[in-house]
Image (cartoon, helix red, strand yellow):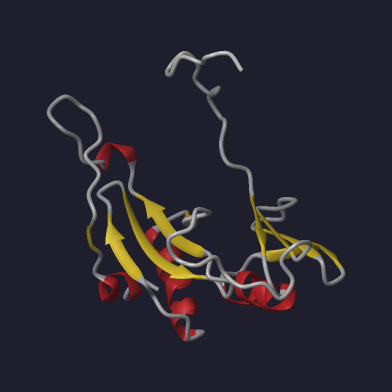
Length: 166
């Protein structure tokens, strides 16, 4: 393989992450979390092996499968893999509503942070995959250093103030 010089290529404008596809142990359990709790709609299902879910009727934002993981267990701490999948909500009220549904479903909140550029709440899905529910602040409100670069933070998020907007 030839050497690639870092910074010699930039992904084209408009490039983004289109979907995440997760290996799960129990398809019905995973669908119950992503559809019933987070509100994604099942667009297509392939028996007890795979399902594709989305928001707004898109073909899929989330793929779930048991092809090589049926009955499996989460990777132990200290192993490589997915840290979390982040779901961007359009505004603070929508984020608050999603968090309220998570709490009502009895799913533990593992963290809540104000990153300056965004507000985020962290939890895990039934297979132990990390999930971030967040909303971005307007870019003009992002904290910046004197030279104009981003100055993201990890400060505590007032969860009760967020939930008051649900």
